[in-house]
Length: 291
Length: 289
Image (cartoon, rainbow over all chains, first blue to last red; front, side, top):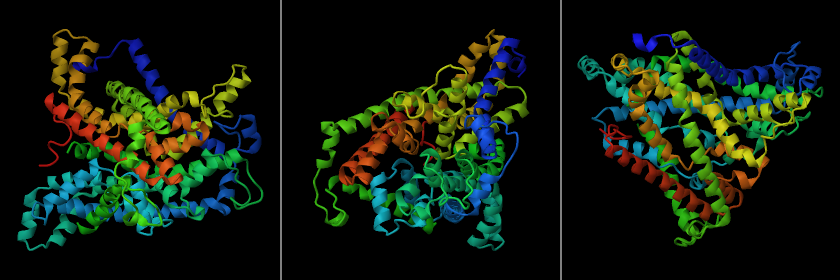
């Protein structure tokens, strides 16, 4: 290690420092600006040309207006519902499927495994997927956004690889002590897999929260829109937020409202990010990925 | 096991069967079963080269090359840079920041880009105030492909490092010591020790990337299509969507989607075979034990 960690010449170190600082700044500065703008007054936003990095005074008017009524509270409720229900279903079915596949004694274990792995290679096209949802009568239903995303073949493969690492002796000894399959699963396998299950659960949750295209494709009724579609309409497409869209007639500046919606859609991700991040450093995922 | 399998079969394999629509002249009121078979008629767009299809194919290929050329290689450089940091804490802070954008949705990423680079954004405001002219990036068809690549880079470059970093940490430090004893400088060490150590991960990720080579940011592009127009932004996936679901030309779109999917599978299998030929483990040799 000595040679590798020997201090490189000063110019090289400076260059590295600059490069990494620039990379980090490219990510951090926009975030700070978005939050600041959402908290700024009209005069300040006008003065700063629409984007405030450090506000002189802070106002929560934009958030108050958005949360008094109109499109945002409804969209947040929809997104929360889709995320919670979806993640619960995903975790339950992924875990059961992966566990079944990790036991060589399971019925039809090999063909089912083939089905899962082949699903990684062959993804259905947009048109047949849409027609399937239509055929099942799920158009304009939240289930159209949730159900197709419930089982990710990739997560099944990762979780199966993890379950296979659990020593057979552990399972065998429990069986000798008279534990049933269900008891073994609930008392031994699940507690051992807490870390990997939480990472997979968080990944599913992020996926549901971020669901955009499936919602665009399947939910025609704008009253059912999740937060990502609201974000597209009022921020990406710059549609004006009027009295009908927010709760009050006293409108804060558009920029502040837009940035506030953006912040609202980012905050849940920021909240769970530290939990996911903690597991990367432990290498849970990386270890599983290399199979 | 059963519920998961049932869902996978319903929402993954049922649509795969639904691909028969590519061989039919689909009429919504007749249903899939009742619509007449038309053989390979729907594939004529591809064979005869419908101009809109060719446009989509061309844009897809250009964006694909940009993405494999830049978005695939830059994270390797970034990982080398980060790996050479000595302080573990600093390393973790930088990692935490760089991974974050991966978890944001495309809607969020594009909102951020529009806000910063748009005509009334802070950069152009600053330029205008100082009489430096303005940069016209958002909604400009001429630089759309570069913009798209930049967005992918911002969102995914950090995350893409993760497997490279893991591989770097597994390289035996003795190799570095031995090469230093033999008089290798820093750059030679990277060339002779580090890059060979990364080879199998690079090959694996490249194979996986080839599988979606023709998938170039569907959500990302759909979101910006209104602003830049079809000419610069139509790619295969958006063509399938616009032509099929928006214009109801179901059969033709499904045919294009089907061919695209098959090309992807062929690329993965072909690349994997090539990797085996060069003595690499490739993608799935170990997976199906």
